[in-house]
Length: 181
Image 1 (cartoon, helix red, strand yellow):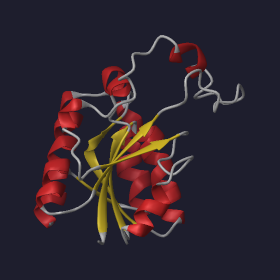
Image 2: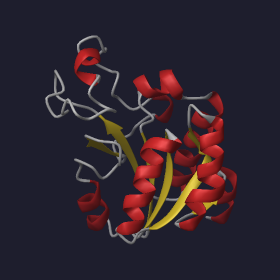
Image 3: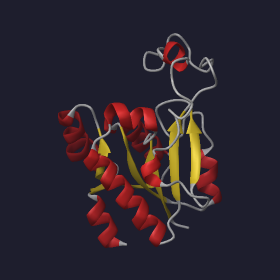
């Protein structure tokens, strides 16, 4: 295998808060295209043990998880049903913002002999940015699907996909990527 599609943080609780119909449609189209062409699909989600003991109180992004964890439904961290996660799909659980942080993603990708990653995710300024930076440092080739990434702040999304990501990744729409396969 040379490439894999990473679909990051498209899980129920995050899609409900930050997702858009357009982003979800683009991400599901990317998954369909990857499956049709035998490209591995890896869904990455963030989840913690009950009570979130993995989260330090000093962690600004995740420290509120301890309080919210008790009120979340059991399926809050599950991959959104729109993707129809199948037996051939891989699901990786991470413990921080980057898809690599606290997960076995790098080991899995090396085992699959993946050299190039195609990224879709929520949020552009969170998991996508962190994963682009770390994956580039790990020498992966990178493509970011601009329309399959979503951020609460459209201007931040624009700056990242137009100015920041192109320094380390190809930035394409899902349609452009699919046409290139």
